Length: 391
Ligand code: GLA
Image: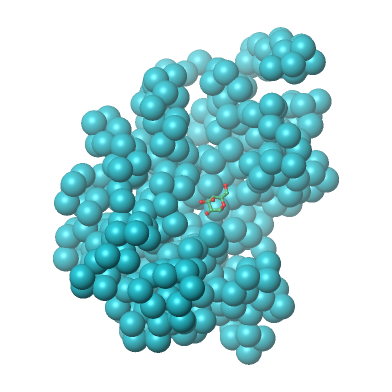
């Protein structure tokens, strides 16, 4: 750390101590406190952080759910060389890093949100091509459906067989709904994305416009075989803004048209301006979030907050961030006052990270002062404000 950063970290400590003066003591693990309001308390974990005792101890003390940041995603699991060699023509996966995370969860009685089976972003294009080669032609829709069905069944079965009961839900599809009509067919009320920042959505292109519904069908068939208690979720960002919220509602209606294949909505929970302080900690976002939980809940869906990052890019706004954290969690607790729609909340922006350069993706996604822990994994006032909000 540079001298300036160290100096500001010291200032944070002094400010934190002052802020902690009027917040409750912690009498029990955080997840016990939130369970009384009906929801699990989750945290993000990566393969690297799963190898670090200070990080895993932090998780073990206060969380009863974890989500792997990237290790359960198709782009991490798929093995191109092995897939090219497979005699049955089906994809081959390498689970070593994901299994390290799953083992940690299993040994400590922590549940896993399986994240994620189908996501168009960062997807290797060879998965959609003949012989899994970079330079060959795209396969036809029927072949791609078989690959997708096989992939989903293999992955769901792998974790359930190796770590029975640990994965309690899967995000089946991530971010399939476009933000605006420039990235989808304008007549599609579900607004399924055909493009992401100019890159084609190959699931849509090769399988067809019903790839989301099909993914849920395959996932339901897979969980029915190994463990029918595993819940299936549709996960996305900006789920609390119209018209995306309504499009997600239409999509889930379409998925559940004949039978209930989708149990719930994962609301990612990046709240505030992207990469900038402007737009952060806006009380209206808390109201919109509450409205959205009710909107999805009234459709008979469970709600998970899956990747919470209450953004803050400005350390001088620490006090405001603490207040916002408490208000946000009070809203979550209040949402469950009459109906228990919300059953799990996972924090992605868990620790401050002021050493990241401004150009870094995580800097922009989470904000460097978003955490409920500081850079050294020490609890910040925000942590205790969650407890306060649950009272
Ligand atoms: C999306 C994904 C997450 C993660 C974040 C970036 O929200 O769902 O898995 O990749 O982007 O940190």
